[in-house]
Amino acid sequence: MRRQLAYSVLRPGGFAPLQRILQEQGPALRASLEREGVQTFSVFAAEAEVCLYYETAGGDYTFEWGPEADEWLEAWPGKDAGLTAVPMIDIFHDGVPEDPQSWRGGRTVEKRVGSVAMLKPEQFASYVFYHYQLQEEKPEGFNKTYIIGSFGTLLFSYQELPAAVSGTPRKGLLDTSNTPDNWHSTMEPHFVPWENAESGQELWRPMELIFSF
Image 1 (spheres, one colour):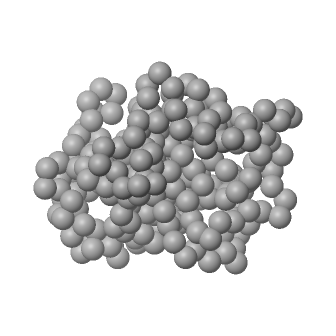
Image 2 (image 1 turned 180 degrees about the vertical axis):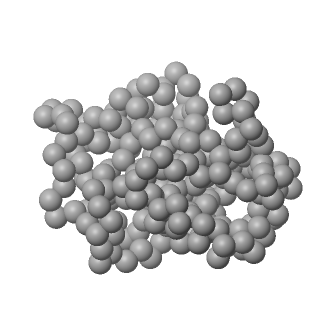
């Protein structure tokens, strides 16, 4: 199994059309994705940002929007020229799925949560270091579905609730115990607070789930 994250940017006025396209084409989109081995798929939006989370049975499948949605999404330059959904880099995952049954069997998903945050550029390496250390010192420490991806200094986190851990979590790659106890106060200096954020939401901004299966 593979867990994948992707990032898109809406053109001005693109939120309502993209939402309409997903509603109208939802059943066909789901059938197409399932034929590609996609087992779960979620689309989140917050202002211009669109973030995707999906799981595949394996292989090299990478999601691409269709022509109708592409009209409302920015295309990327460089090596990703023409793409409107760019894969994000996995910089933290609490759990690693081995097979669909052990990963999802018997587990009920009540809520899918997506959030975005911005890192200070000079703090990016530190943030990745701390999260790799946490990931490998304490695998499945709180919710095996929690994952963070990056596109530059933009972060996207995804998790399913209620939180879940396996009966026998994998053994991490580190035998150290250096993860700080004051985790939240250690992380706070890494972030750029959002402007006009509501109280308690200065660092991670909740996204709206606009499509999922």
